[in-house]
Image (cartoon, rainbow, N blue to C red; front, side):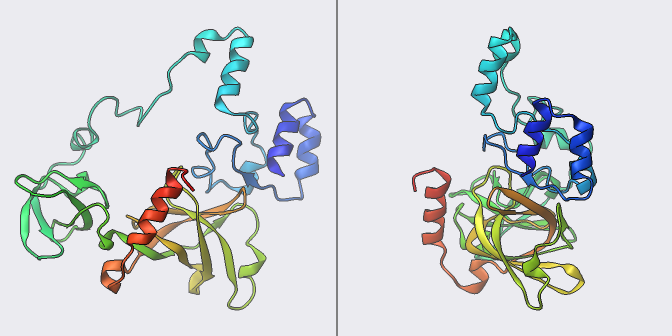
Length: 278
């Protein structure tokens, strides 16, 4: 396993010899021991040749263990340093204020999906993301972004964070980048790959079935609906602790609202998983 190889390399094994052993063999990217610090989601597009030259000496350690090691090594100031949160180059500003420095505001309308009525004004679709809560003056309930239409400059919203329009269990991606080789299940005619899916860092993994379409695109069917899957995000696939690779999402839907389906039980179950209560 790549993590074992990397730990061996960092533990004193000659790197040139290790590189020679790996020269004609694909290596795999495994999740870190500390799930809160795992970076495989962001490394899911790493080329095989680059991965072979990488070392992750902290892959087998929890963050608190690393801090203890730092203290023992006399690096007390570093061990006590607070972790950086958010996007470092944005700083303490609101993200909407930051993005307005680069993209001019363009006011438009908020449209309620259920009634079809205009219920407010926004100052630019670039300031809102799918699933985000909107501040709409005079609204009697919280509204969340369902869709953004660049041509009409409108944002369609739904009432309530668990509105079924925000949930789907279907998505299509571009041709995927496999970190190692393509799983053998997809090489067969009409093959199906059973694995796990994530589209946001640190979100719980969801079981899914993956089908290969024309032009090597992927059709992914989730075992449970997820909220606010958005075109342009990345579908990252896992098998056990291995990160298989990822691909950009080109289509998400139809929503449970469009299909007339209820997702209340799924939402309750997903929330329990996310809170580690099951």
